[in-house]
Length: 223
Image (cartoon, rainbow, N blue to C red; front, top):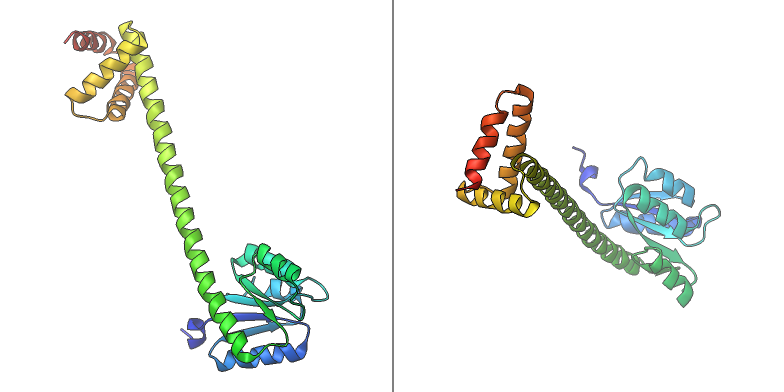
């Protein structure tokens, strides 16, 4: 593996060539791999072909604004971004934060300030991605548990309906019966229900066991 593959990769997009050169030189001297573009559109295109850990985007660019490019980059590659601008008024900074920017860098910037913002941005990006991954895992676990619960409830309801029909008993009696049998057989209620359904399906196909299966159920009811 190329040593570059193990380095953190930063994307810088700015139509100001002096800013672009300063950012590239500062970041490369600090050990980062740097990709540079002069437009938001180029920045968006780049993340479709290169893995990028953080993007620095100029607030105003001639084609696509830094905020629009940042949102597109997050959507395409889950890459977080920092906004750069010569304007530091409260509305601009607030808008950047609302749109998902991890930081705001005022130009012209000091190299030390640039590096500090990048370190903070990378740290926050890792935290956010870890949190989102955790939330996703929880949602998937919840969905899986819900699916199992629904399937279990469906099996129990089907088995109870079968017992009502075969034993000519009420739903309450069928529920009590299957609950008692599960306890006697030391099985979960859903497991017993699924066993009953499977056995009934097999009986139906064979058409040979209906009579004694019904008699067995009647005897079990009267235990």
